[in-house]
Length: 402
Ligand SMILES: Nc1nc2c(ncn2[C@@H]2O[C@H](COP(=O)(O)OP(=O)(O)O)[C@@H](O)[C@H]2O)c(=O)[nH]1
Ligand SMILES: [Mg+2]
Image 1 (cartoon, rainbow, N blue to C red):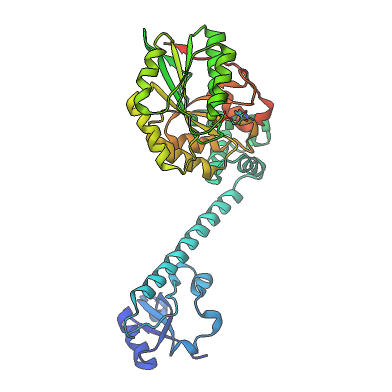
Image 2: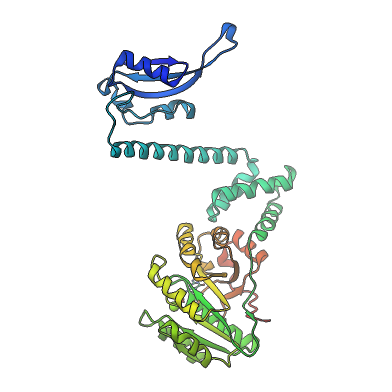
């Protein structure tokens, strides 16, 4: 093998030596900074060491195009990928791009694996009593970092003695999670003489129409609030019919609005209602044009509250995507549906943080009007730690009068 190492007090000096011995076609495999030993091991100076070969043919296959240096020696021995280097004719910009691209890719992979290693080593440093709880949180769809932070805080606050008491560990966890759940409270009837307008937005199938029926029925039956409905979901055949059926059963007025300029008139016709609930088209979260349409409706007649309806059955990635897409329409509340279908409810924490809005209601099943509850931080913290399916509807308090 014709690999050789060259040293110099600077990179330029080491490169000169490579060039002198191997010529212009030399291939650099790795560089690193080392410390030379002084007399009796004292007073060493930093020195640059380059490993090079005379040309690509001399580079063993196993070293070509790989991150060998990274794998064997860590960050300080970061390799330069095999390439015509030293002073060869200048490479084309696309090959430079490719090299940079793959270098960045390697670094990204390295950083990710370092983060994962750090996390794993933090996790293994946890007292063994808490390992099970940590894995339970990860299974309940908590982000791994968040799960670790929570477990470390439990350890801090309980000390080593009480860690075997699982009730105490759970109670402490719940008390740490509850303050991380921003809660907006129920719909506020804020206007006198004019309806309070509340719109629900979110992707198709997230549960908007069903939730509107639950909210309308709760407001009428519990609080004797007069309710009107508007739907601007005229994209799908059947969407209007679904809401019309609910409106007929509850004997409440329904307005169908096809264009933003029609919205103020529809609201005026419902002027006697205390609460108007607006159902919107189930735009796919990737459909920017339709989301822009939605924004135009709300510019024509701004609602008092816009609740983003998110299904707890979605993955963390989908929820992040949905939140980013719908935020620009002016969302100021989050409403989580399908808690009964979620694999883990830990994702709620991340979604609320990303949406930067409080949670209004949660829904826990398909039954209208029963399967809905005003969100409450400590109940929800318990639900997150429990199996949500065990906790169906509870405590629905309906829209509160201002
Ligand atoms: N399991 C479960 N299903 C729900 C819940 N809320 C709504 N659904 C169902 O989800 C489906 C889509 O609901 P829909 O209200 O039409 O969604 P939209 O497209 O956002 O209006 C329907 O089958 C609903 O019965 C819930 O909390 N739990
Ligand atoms: Mg719908």
